[in-house]
Image 1 (cartoon, rainbow, N blue to C red):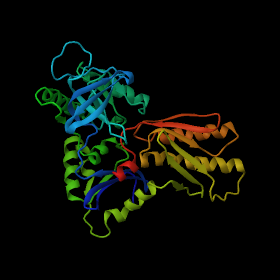
Image 2: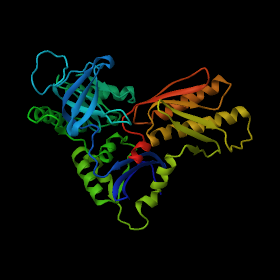
Image 3: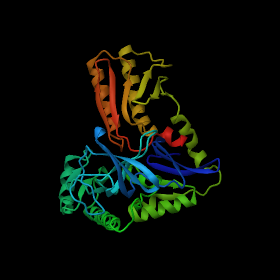
Image 4: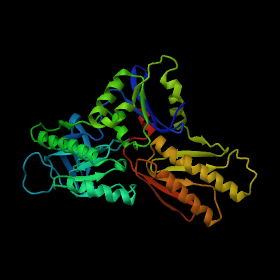
Length: 399
């Protein structure tokens, strides 16, 4: 039924509040799940004229107010170059200053949203930035592709913007990249111009709905089909694709069957329930216990009902390898971030530990969000970090 690279987007009505459920399937398994409010304004990635309310020197931060009275955290440690709306003397940030800011991280529990003065304009292949006026290339690109893309992208550097070439740019033609650069440049110029003529706290640029914008983060080779059964969502996606990703327009399909529903056909509600459970069973009969805490996420690997008849060494390696693949999937599925500590089953041989670490490293590289395998501690605990961008799946569902 499900095939590799299918994105399903549907609406679930819950207590008269419509929620958009998004599920990305690879090889028949859900690898990414997201939940959004139907008419929820996209805060993440949007750009505002903010006003500095106060400077907190002891934490090297400022708090900046944007539209709706939302107070946002701004780090002074990054030493960014603010884009001021009004001329001012000196370059030091001070209360009352009005500047262009972009929301770079959503609010999480008691933490305010984070904003940056380094404005980013992401496309499918490129990201334009007002920060460092340099060329950056995705570390996931091959050396051959990096060299080819460097030659194409270097002429884009005119001193106005920095350019980051994304993983999706692999094998993209020069014409396609030039076209996207032109579109992103126009967006950036429009924002910088509009910002000078709009009132304080107003929104200068709004990101597309999160369920649409998320499409550009899926590797192009993996995205084969986009399916929805909601006409409003279909129209939004069609408009987004025609404007930002016309090459993917033909992948969008409208599901018209009344029975079974798209939700039931793909078991989306069931996938969400499973992704919120603490215990995850593996095919071998072993299982994971995933416990997010305030400071980090702890994952424990257990032999469970495993009934292998091989040597203990082979048994433990096999369970750990299976667990590693599932852990990489669960990080994406639940959108876990920050510090992640994994307690694999103890293995005595260095060769087995090395094999496990290499396999886990390869699995997490498939994640569109930056995930780093740090090390294995002397106690045998494996440490990872995953960049925080959006709320965890649990937080999205409970909103």
